[in-house]
Length: 157
Image (tube, rainbow, N blue to C red; front, side, top):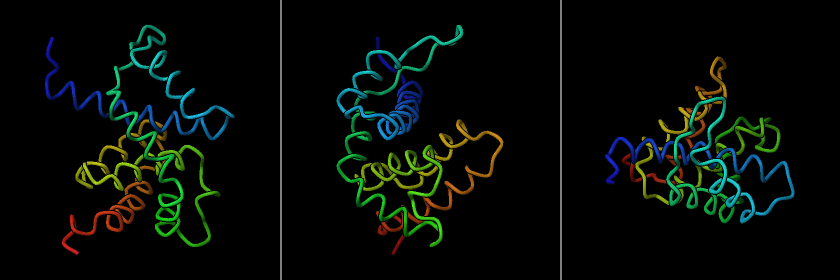
């Protein structure tokens, strides 16, 4: 069975959402990256919750985001801090947003995906977690700043 372009995009989108959840879980538990990665790949991808099957995530995207966020956390957190208002360092923001910025930052730092795609994808992730809030607009602004720092050539700088 071949996977269509739309299916591949949906799987990458799901992997981004799962990466945010996994990073959040790692921060709020004493679980290692290996343990959390295995839990997600074995139990969350394609899981059925209340008769709704979760989308199968793209394993390679999930792993790259998770590993990149862990390996580059200091760089990503500093980049995020520079994008945030001075009075709100990354350790004071919502832990879900912190996980989101780390996953998005990993993708931006890797430089394989166009920054505008990363921003749109992670704003959609923010909408999944904060459907009625102002967070998606906040995420858009912070990620735009981070993207310009991580990939200035993509913006003509």
